[in-house]
Image 1 (cartoon, rainbow, N blue to C red):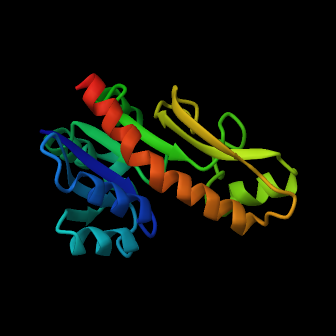
Image 2: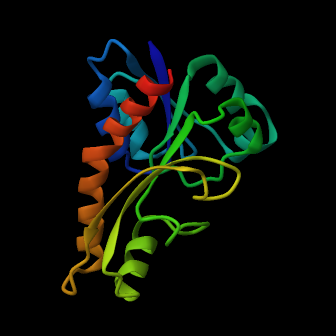
Length: 189
């Protein structure tokens, strides 16, 4: 059984979708959800779905090995589902090609520090992009620069608002993220 630990910062719709997707799997299990916000809605979702969950602070993540040791004990793969902090090198080194993120744009466009959520969707609409989509990628030492695993795009209509783009992105995330996680884990062990 391969174990997933999800890192998330917000409401947790992607985390919930991943948990539900693997709920009856005999090969992959979400064993824990960790958040950098103690009041993040993702923790409530995890609790409701019977998944261990807890929060940590900046010191735990960057200045000590507390989060690293927890991950080493519990995770085969680390999945970022709306997690906004940069992953420290010690965690990246401990999980080479085992930390997977989803980004709400077709990287390399609209990636990097500060490019998340509605910031991305607003930029896509303001720049009159013709396509947008999702990128699932491995995490390295730089924001949104890890090797791309999967991309899926859609046409951005002239009439689309940033909210419309966000809705289309969310649908792609829900449909594809768990399947791609499963594929990567089953192919790589």
